[in-house]
Image 1 (cartoon, helix red, strand yellow):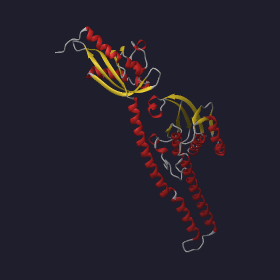
Image 2 (cartoon, helix red, strand yellow; image 1 turned 180 degrees about the vertical axis):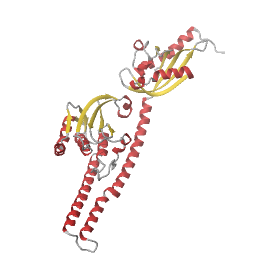
Image 3 (cartoon, rainbow, N blue to C red; image 1 turned 135 degrees about the vertical axis):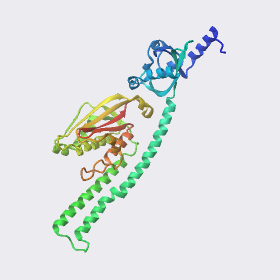
Image 4 (tube, one colour; image 1 turned 90 degrees about the horizontal axis):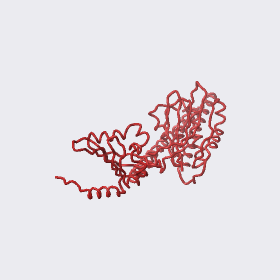
Length: 379
């Protein structure tokens, strides 16, 4: 039979809990209101006891988790099952995120009714970051292997195809029996041979560009995105004028990056918008930037605050299932007879963002347009 603690023993017990620094240990009432606070909670979460007692514990959760009702779901599970265990990103007082492993245990009165909860939280951010780095490394190795396969595919198919066409047209010009074709057919075959050679030249140029941006040795500097977009527009000015396209941008942020790569990023994205425009309406492209908080990315990029840049167009768009696929090398959503290109441009964009310590993603709606969002680290 359990012995009831003396007042002295109970005081020592509470003193021990209060002095623990490696774990946040607190008590919640039946509604989830914080009733006490130890040194570990102050160390991990950043609040003083007088700042937090009387506040609902949802304050520690990310906005999306609060909107989803996760804190309430956890205490209801603890009330129903006796205990709730969960791991996820939590919010400190200063707005930074940490990876918390929590156990919420229901406390009962003599009649078995739930009257309160104990909540124990451990900061496992370093473990989470180590796991994510290992996972990221594994993904990088997988991506590099895939990249090698894609290069092999290019050598076996994309680079051989123009050569095959040139040889075919050469044979057609002179005929299998050595007799030359008539002048009109010769001109047609020569024109097609030149087009095949141009396709191979574009492929070689894109492969060289992809190789050029492979390294990360360039020193990061302040880059005015307004100037980068202006230079990209200048590179496509003839096409913009010819198509009657409009490119809107103003008051864009300055970011830390590699200037020529960021310029190339906008050149490629603008080229993509021009290529996949809707023939039934004038092309409109808008470029905007804003600062956004993504706390869950802090474990990968070291910060949770990013400068988000969005390039939107009203072109033909694409289906949602292609949002990742379009960044793969030599990946085309349309045949070469519909749209020209080598299938490397967006792969270059993703590599540029990797080199600049950020990431890129895309969304499209068929028939309405596409938006490419890329994120630079702040700080």
